[in-house]
Amino acid sequence: MSTKKTILPAFVLLVLILFSSCAGVKEIAYLQKLSAKTDSIKHNSTLFEARLKPKDMLSITVASSEPLTTRMFNLLVPIVLPNTESVLSQPAILTYLVDVDGNIDFPVFGKIKVGGLTLKEVESILQKKMESSFSKERPIISIRFTNYSVNVLGEVNRPGKFISTNERMTILDAISNAGDLTIYGRRDNVKVLREYADGSKKTISVNLNDENVIYSAAYYLEQNDVVYVEPNISRARGASFGAAESFGISVLSIGISLVSLLFTVLKK
Image (cartoon, rainbow, N blue to C red; front, top):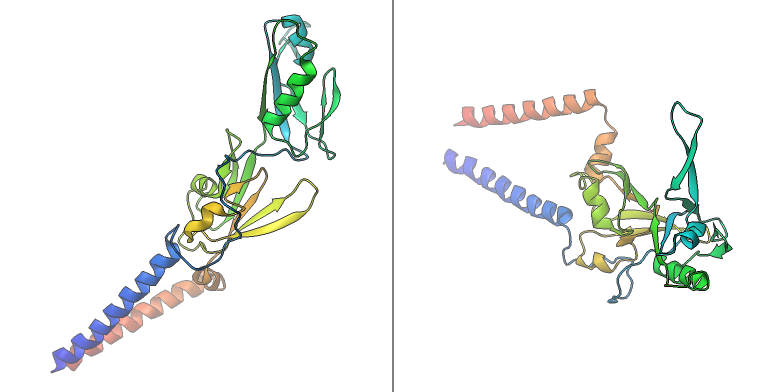
């Protein structure tokens, strides 16, 4: 009889543990079908292209079979040879800053409005402007971001600033670069802080548990976005205790478990 009394509470405890572990999986697993809403946009089949904002840094290079003309648009950077007084000039990537009005200051043409445009659109504008300068062929223009990056903070394993090499980064890419969320990170309410070209700012909530996250307005991160992962309730509660208090609670919990086990054994 005493054995049955001992087995029944143990069985009930096991069932409770199983149910709690299932709830934990729902909180941790990504891309589930949940009813929680995300800040979403309509699905479309076009590929993401970043649009230029103030303070973006660009590298612009022009190539053609006409070196003299090309040289006008590829500025030369002077380099001083070590231990000499000689100054050389050689082609180098010159960085262009998009100013607060959305302009870049380009050789020969001066101020050019690029704010709100994609890199492909800026390349097209420059090619049209250069058509009359080249007699043999249209020049090849290559434009790249030099500072396309996002910051990831909060409950991730490797918080920091991450640079994109292809002018595209999804929120899952950013989290992957940061070593994934810790077990204490809230996956249902990740915050993305975004600043727009007009200076306005917005915080977008993203639910990584929801499979519809791929349609979120923050699925594709824009340059200089900040991703913040909130701590869950367990982490928040634990933060209110110091190391000594946490150790004391652990010892007390172990002591209670041992006393309970001893009481059960002696009762038999």
